Amino acid sequence: MTAIHDFIDNEVKSNPVVLFMKGTPDFPQCGFSGQVVQILNYLGVDYKGVNVLADDELRQGIKDYSQWPTIPQLYVRGEFVGGCDIVREMFQAGELQQHLTEKGVVVRGHAEA
Image 1: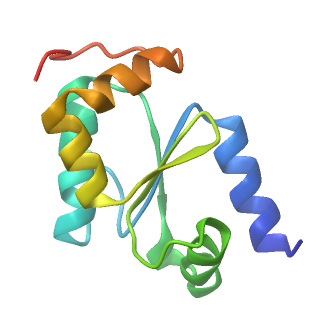
Image 2: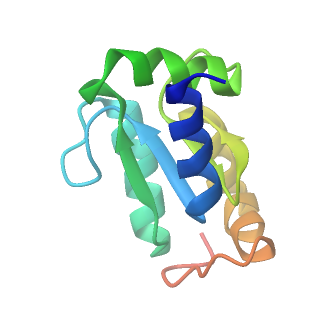
Image 3: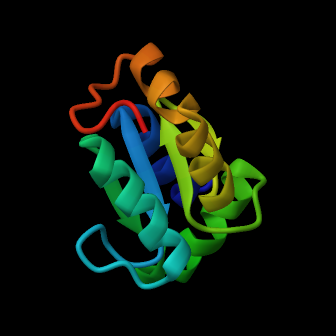
């Protein structure tokens, strides 16, 4: 495994919720990353944002790691959940909140969408 894969693997496994995104949670650099940030913030979920724009190797590495072509990418307890469309659809159906709760992640906000 390369150093970048080791870094990604460590982030995914050592943080309950990780969002690989363009920009930061405070300043998303694309609309799709911004939508996922809004959903997680709405739910009151603690998560770590990792800015893929800071490093080209990371930007490509996360796509290779997940075998998913787009960013953002959401991981919960080491498991790839999906990108913006999947996260949004799960949220709208109430499935994201349920998934987070089942994985032992505290949902403080508006648990019922």
